[in-house]
Amino acid sequence: MSTTPETALPAEETAGHGDINVGVTGASGSGEATASATRITPGNALRPEDIALAVSRGSAKPSEDAAEFALRLGDDALILAQRLGHWISRAPELEEDVALGNIALDELGHARSFLSYAGGALGEDGTARSEDDLAYFRSEHEFRSAALFEQPNGDFAVTIARQFVVSYYQFELYRRLMSSTDSTLAGIAAKAVKEVDYHRDHSAQWVLRLALGTDESRQRMIHAFKVVWPFVDELFHDDELTGRLSEAGAAPQPSSLREDFDRLTGEVLAEAELEVPNVQPTPGGGRRGLHSEHLGYILAEMQVLAREHPGASW
Amino acid sequence: MTTEPQAGNVWPIWEVFVRSSRGLSHVHAGSLHAPDAAMALRNARDLYTRRNEGVSIWVVPADAIASSDPDSKGSFFESPQGKDYRHATYYIKSEGVKHL
Image (cartoon, rainbow over all chains, first blue to last red; front, side):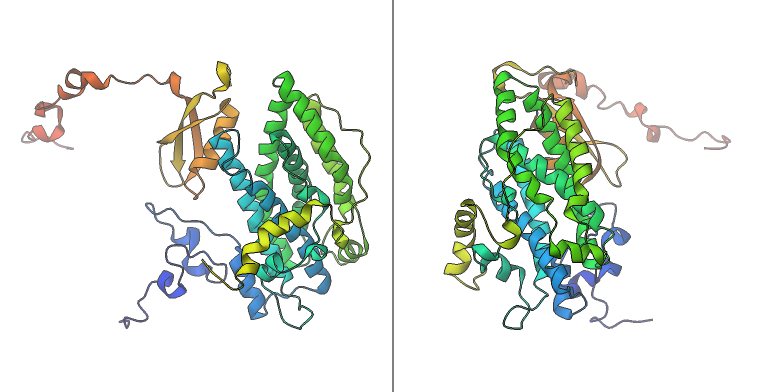
């Protein structure tokens, strides 16, 4: 059977992704199935672009509740990514620079996926919003991230303590979210949980080394957990939204993650010969748009370029 | 994890070997700094498998590797030159020999 030149084009060229053609929608001609012995493929995974496409085509549409929930998780990841990005070129060693940069990029990927999905719920003017609309053109009180994520990097130990809490929390959350009745949330979680699992390992390794290292590193690790721990409780607060989502099987109640979080972080802290800090929890309020003084500065830095030059691309 | 931390806050160097998904053997990918073997593996994962390159990593303390002396190239590596008889192609099949 003969083919015309048009139909003989390889799938990669028609899809417009060149060598990186891994979209879920066009998975038949990509990924592991056609991997060659000599070409390294990026593998097959759910990408933010796939979600944005599904949202624009209308094949993925979040309920109002699911969108609000995606906004919370997306904002958590986005603000943390922005914080972690600040370490690039400033970490104690080049290798750690890359490690923190990788974690920041993982979190940014999760943020893009969640925000792309959240944008599928119509805005006040009745149109869908893009991830960029949500990231760059909302103001402080419209962000739904918990206070922990916006806390300053502090020294390396504070960053590690914050990352330790975040990754153990996110792992328990995403692990459960994989069985969500909302298939997009489940898909994002399934991709993210593997990455967050590595973040747990990375931070736990550092907690052990700093706590069991020198007197100086141990004091810094102890101090870091005191700084970070007041923000832990907020992560596990239930509210009306999570109640409705839990009822619908779309998301777990945050409080249901606490037992596993306490047990698993407790194991690492015990091995590191550290106590769970006895500190007063902060009242929280990030899920309702009430933030600490830090978020405004983060947003100013993160949003200034996009707001100065709306629609610019580079 | 037997490598002791070095004095002067300098992390030791580790050589990294990565086996690609379809490769049979680990191939030297490069080197990095790490305080111990466990962190060396993690740094190697972050530095050398970012683009889906590998399914297995080895790390070896650089000072555990003994290497040949670049200056003794002649006596070490040039002696086999001209020794055709070390190659199978040197030999002619004798008549009547089966199963070759």
